[in-house]
Length: 395
Ligand code: PLP
Image 1 (cartoon, protein in one colour):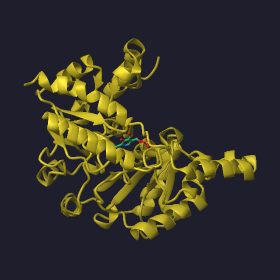
Image 2 (cartoon, helix red, strand yellow):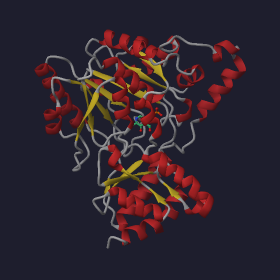
Image 3 (cartoon, helix red, strand yellow):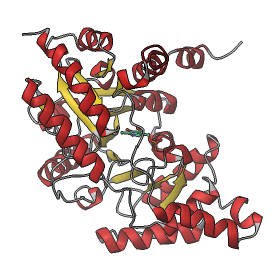
Image 4 (spheres, helix red, strand yellow):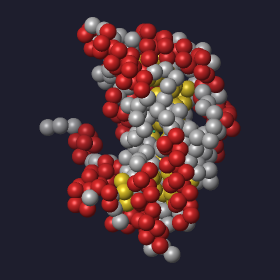
């Protein structure tokens, strides 16, 4: 016998994984050059040279235990101090080594943070649609349930009215994600200012702090010279979940961190609960080699120019054909309105043309599709004929 709940979870593949697997099979039949796979968010820009150099240096100069041995459960103290120095220099964050907990990427950062914050099965965690579908899995794992704010389809920022209405005495936390997967939008300073005002007012009203969990795996993938904003400056009661999966193109290495700044409510308690949650779920001592790699690569990131070029190519190309697209300011996703109300039906029609695009229903935003453009630019160019055939079906 096994847990029914976990069995059910393990049996369901995500729509993204399904499409990706379909693409791999289809490529064997029709040839990979005839399949236009925009399903998955796997970084295609190579990791910067500092990653290889740091690894080679470590292997050449260090003893085995200093490379492969356990670190402290929360991560190596020197690495965490380096992260603190970087955040202080870059964002004037006022943090120290003991505010950081090293993790196996953003997924682990989020599961640990939620487990640390959730107290009772009545606890509610607010999600702003559209959102990364795994959030609901992580929230259920922590023993809470989600409350979903409908998408603000005008500009894909956050509807403050909806936020105000959704908060109840059971609200424990709100998860936000900017730059956003799947919408590609970036929250403005104005959005953060207004959000902070709502959360401060509501925290007072319900008599306990509402934590803001800022999921930031795309923090540095941002275009048009937009500034990167440090969220605790707007709302101090913030826990940051970070990952190097996208910013250093290291999704397979599983490395990231949780930052609980001292300005968060009961910061010491929350940080200690983060350590406890990491321990309870076996997320201790994140991969040693990659803790050291990120230390050596502080301030260096994968070159986003290729993503930026793809962004312009795809956005302009699809707009010219008549698709209604959300202007992407960050991450590497283009969010497109389905020309028919049922985005799943639209995605199925696309699939018949070997065009693999993800209906956004599971992101909490029916009627839209996500097109992941961390792909070869040649594939984007080759896909245009299929995109044209697809939209012509609606004319
Ligand atoms: N959060 C968002 C918004 C993501 O898009 C992803 C991955 O695509 C994750 C979290 C998980 O990232 P990681 O690979 O660091 O676990």
